[in-house]
Amino acid sequence: MVEVPLKLVGGVFLAWLGWKSFSPAPMREAAEARTGDLFETAAATFFLTITNPMTILAFAAMFAGLGLAESPRHVDAAIVVTGVFLGSLLWWFILSGGVALARTRLPDSLSRRVSHLSGVILFAFAALAIGSVARGYF
Image (cartoon, rainbow, N blue to C red; front, side):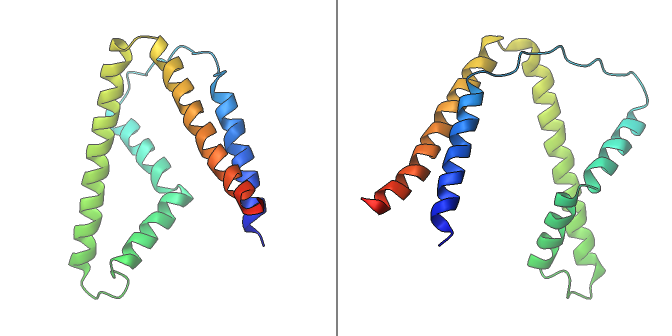
């Protein structure tokens, strides 16, 4: 029975992560962005992302799930790849734009409060995991 040790180890790990979130690393200054070629930066980011093994596995699973592996039509695959590309591009524009706007407008104490809230949530999940094991024995 592997379920009990996994729940215990997972619960202890979540509790450790919760504990660590109450003493986060001190904030550092943001790195200065180079004023270089935008295409060069976008290409480097693209190749870093596309060579990530988890990205490759996720795309393989998605294409297999959509039945594109058996489809003889290349148009179907091109539509999916274009949609994924445009969706990812939009997501990164929203994410990076939101961070750029929020970085200057949010109070410094917000990071500490979010970290503490995350710690409380992690402790709650740890208690649920360990409690489910204890409930089985009592």
